Length: 616
DNA sequence: GAGCACTGC
Image (cartoon, rainbow, N blue to C red; front, top):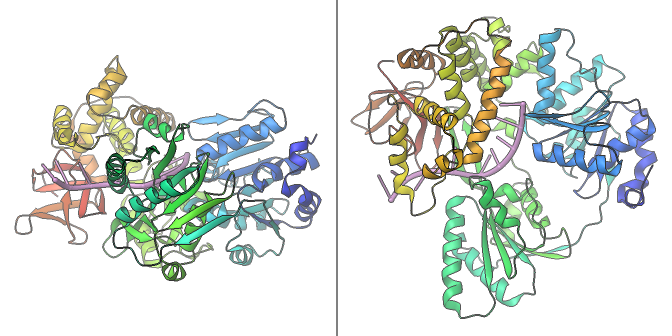
């Protein structure tokens, strides 16, 4: 049954054509901007055409998978989890009756991997007849890998149907890669957005942002403002200056300033979504670009920059640095102004600067370390990962280095074949070093300690310090400090959190993020469940020396020595100089030998999550 | 006084 709403969507007129195209082709591409209805309608069309077909639809984000399933369920007037369901980490809402499953890209990759524990030959996702990869234009590592796996699978399963869905960009590239000519472009009815550039180059985008917002506020008709900035620091600066200027402006028109970035505790984030009596301006990071939609936005101001994480192959360090946005990103930001009615976008860069921007951002698979991806590929049964046909081939040297690291972690043998240990490692949702650590820690009888440590190290934004109160950070860390180790100190925090009765006030007292700790507890439970496959006996010691010894071996590529002449740490692998991060218990302490989880260049090269060891 | 964008298993 099609209700009236569904027949009025722009995609409805393509219904028969798309059904026919799926019948005639193994792989088809459907391109259309957000709002054309492709994600909710196509799976339903396929189901209505043949109710026996099982369909998987992947999404880059959990929330999207969950809300889309809910939306479709509502349209089909069925209970969520029956005909239509979703499957995301920590939450499987499907049943035997489920025909359409929305799931995250990562979950579908996991299904390939879990196949090896059932039967090495059964990695063909036979439970699905149609697999839809949505938002492929975002080019996440997961969706790129899935496209490669499905391209392969199509040769072995002739009945399988694959649909790639994306925004209307890079369509030819996808079509060439997937060797298909079945392309459908869906026009959506969207509101126009008028774009204005500044006439001359701006020196300081924080200042420029403040001026633009105030001018907009005092001269333009009603409608909320969404401002794109690059991080917490910019956002706090702009907020402070805005509030100050509003105070001295002597104007009647009030302005509500809200912030939105992922390190902000969820309850504070919520304020950005609440309707405001006065005009509202939301100062946001990228989070508002795709992940989150705010209603009522009519004006967008775009600073033109974004922080991008990349992996420097030679130096083997991560960087998180400011970069100009891509044209596609600038369009995406502008589009956020036209969701409900005609909108306006103000760019704090000149038209000439815009012309010189890259068309698209470099895909993630060409910018990140691939250690865990390579292990996943081996676990899925790809013999030669170096020649595996991906839409963009990563750096050969990097992949080779990753393969050799996996050999050292005993995940692969010297011929790069997956070992039993590697198979176990790949079953855990962790970076390979941590999978290795957890399994070894179990074998040494310190599993409980290791599990607490690993679980809490997986979550970000453990602490939330408001501006002005930040001098207390080291004081709080000192309360939990154990054995000159962030790994053990954080394990201690999780343990104390578990033991305490009033968890909320415990968090408040210690500037801890309650939601983050709850997530750490879910991670812990999940890891415990996955480890059941491996665990045979239980034997528990509280041995910090053993802990450090096993961790040091797992982090064998992440050792550093203090160099007094440089007043900094020298990384053993590359001789790169680095400093201990201010959020570490070892900040300002200068122990001679340390191991660390991560080295990242922001304002300086920092070692994050550090533990002192006796020797290298 | 320092200080990490976003997402996923």
